Length: 313
Image (cartoon, rainbow, N blue to C red; front, top):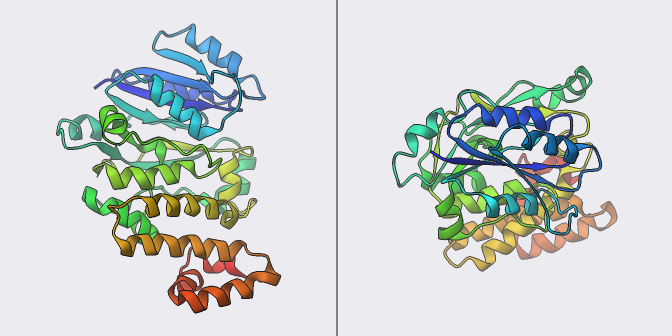
């Protein structure tokens, strides 16, 4: 295996060295691609120091040297990758020694286009643990049991709670399948949840297989300045950010002719539910009444689905 590990770097001077070292521990890692996204801290200088130490590390910036967000930054990494396989790693996270154990066996089968595993949690400081342990605990982010590849997309769309989740940090993909078969890239329009939207589309187009699900193969680093941590802990209203996510998914589904109509309808109802959740209180009942008349199940999905009902009122 020749794996390209893509690490977007933004405001991560304290963490990126650990992320890089965790990737370099594997002989299968052909290259570690750092894409520096105009960090306000000293991350660029740290990256420059890293590339001097190991010729497997490569450093790039956007052509205009600007800040473009995680999605376009990962896209640039995909364009620069030369390995046969692509893995992603956030700059404040890190791989564990078993990261590619399952992948080395599963990818011997040419029909396997991607493999996913379980993500653990690491608290960088006691303050971060005190703030966020009630949110994350020590639980794994994982798909709860092994499913066939055709079940992954509907499982994420319909059964998110019971199906489980996998993280971008635990995903490995055949590069030719990603680039040639579907040419899928991250959406530049999303500053948050761009990885979730990417994984939805990826699981629809590619055959993704479960790797190690019962123990972590990578660790999510939790600290006070992590934006997605603030979303998950409700410091930023999750309904506000997820309405944008489901709007993108809804737009994609409407334009993808091969998606069955019942799945398109379900996605649209998910989007509507989050729109209701983010409607200001004075207008909320009007929006609910409108949808009640036009599509009662969309209201029911919003009120009774555990993912949304706590956000409605």
